[in-house]
Amino acid sequence: MIDLHTHTIFSDGVLVPAELARRARVKGYKAIAFTDHVDMSNLETVLERLVPACAEMAAGLGITLLPGVELTHLPPDLIAPAVARARKRGAKIVVVHGETLVEPVARGTNRAALEAGADILAHPGLISDEEARLAAARGVFLELTTRPGHALANGHVAAVARAAGARLLLNNDAHAPADLVSPEMAAKIAYGAGLDLDGWRQLQESARELVEMKNAG
Image (cartoon, rainbow, N blue to C red; front, side, top):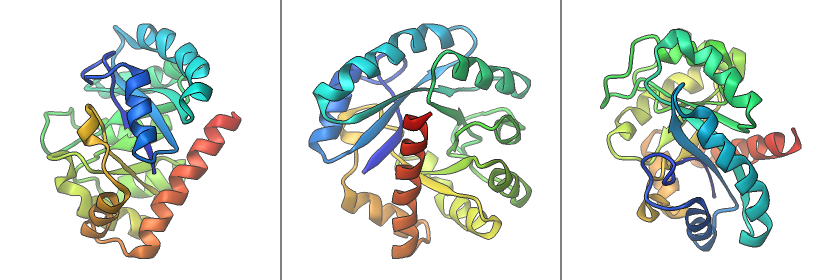
């Protein structure tokens, strides 16, 4: 199990990074990314803390830790410069908070995230066929999520992504320990989104490949 979309006390999560990592490790997770909510006001502040902390704690905790951010509710025209700033400051995983069905995310956010080449477009809601093709072309992963509310569009996201050849990930968007689902529940959520066993295995392989690529970079 790998979760590349989590939150700590640096945004609206309830745990410090070490405790979230420890709890994930005990549940069998091999890698997690800390992707706290940021905008232009706190991007540098969060990464100044997460980047060295991940490097210092990973070996002792026995889990791969990736520092990152989730660009959240930014105006679409600020997403590209924010992606660049996050990477310059050491973010290994850049997530953009997509056009979920349950929040008033600005229209055009999905496209801006894809054009900016973010790593993951989180819970993209009713993403269009054209946007899914853009995700495939730009190598941006589209997220299936275990998080209630955001998960309402999982079936649509999976179908559109597969038709377009876009790659999928399954993340928890974890804010608390209970959000770290078991492998069995994660598989059930993937099947509920319309994937078969091969599709579930591809989700896991995609996550492993992204972690390996980001660790090597």
